[in-house]
Figure (cartoon, protein in one colour):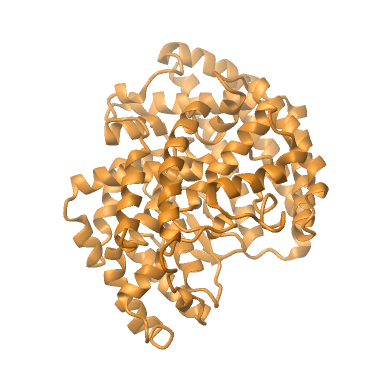
Length: 511
Ligand code: ZN
């Protein structure tokens, strides 16, 4: 038994080494690779991905898992019932995660995996062109192909209630379509009137953010905030890329990227804080999990809860800027901010305005963009919506949810890369992150009553330590559902996020 378990752990370790090697190649591709290397790089990555898939789905792995599982119990068990200080905790959690990955990968035939890789690679190129030409019909046949493959995947993998469950499960394990629909409906019903009330007010002047802010100074300030958040530059680095991201190249190498726009103070700043939140999660994972399947965040929703807590709940709070605005103004941008006071700055940071592009959306309207994508994905996967009717459905949804209508597909249905990658089921995790984040932060405030005063003094350590203790260290040994229950004593509940938004934006806008 022990030997069989060791063999599985060895296989897992090799897989993680390959995963981190691939991540390094990807990081290099995004940050510094010469353009001419793109084809060779995609061959290198495809080779590594094939090796990872072959190792994970080897018949030997299936045999070993079957034998070891019999001893440890079926995969349906809850880790909350296992003593986390007992050695068995790691073994059970490891088998559950590794077994889950194996099940998923082994079910999908190689034919499907290869076809998806080829079709999505072509679809991404077609999407870039279609967006540039503002011409959805160029992308339509590609998306139809990807949707067909995605629906086939759902049937191969199986699902409890709705085919979309199978897709969601890849990014947010255990989450169900019906559950997401329920919380999103509740969220939408509260957000729309709040956005309407603010839209009726005098618009906030945030023109100061579009003055000229040299990139070098922006970099210095972002690095300082990252350091004070607790991001460890001995185990990470900050670089530039077209699309900001966080990547783990191992347990002790967690890198973040950002993008500087000299005509916009907020882009790189809040982008860096966001990625810093992701990175603190990865950096805070128990060292005993490094190099194993447990050594990463447990779900995209939980990951996003950490980034959004730092970016919004902390980074856009009155308390945070109480400390950091005087610093920003005095030491970094004295000229640009000379006529701006703290209150003006905070209102600018929290300006609410329904807009067309998700990634530029404010904290309040952001979730509505995500809800639209979820509704459309479910309709597509259910067969209730045809791809050719997607642009019209998009525009109708934007009008209904946000009260704005795009004048082009480039600023509408073609704006996101996700569908061209075949990543259907991913979007909900962005809004779920907001919900988990607010639910956890409420508990943090109860556990540390002085936390707001600490933040207002620029002391961010208490937040990071609480997150480390309650969330980060577990890696993926606890599922999102287990973490949520353990921390808050209940299932995911949108009420906390709604209360937080109503209070914050009510105060800021004198509602
Ligand atoms: Zn994120």
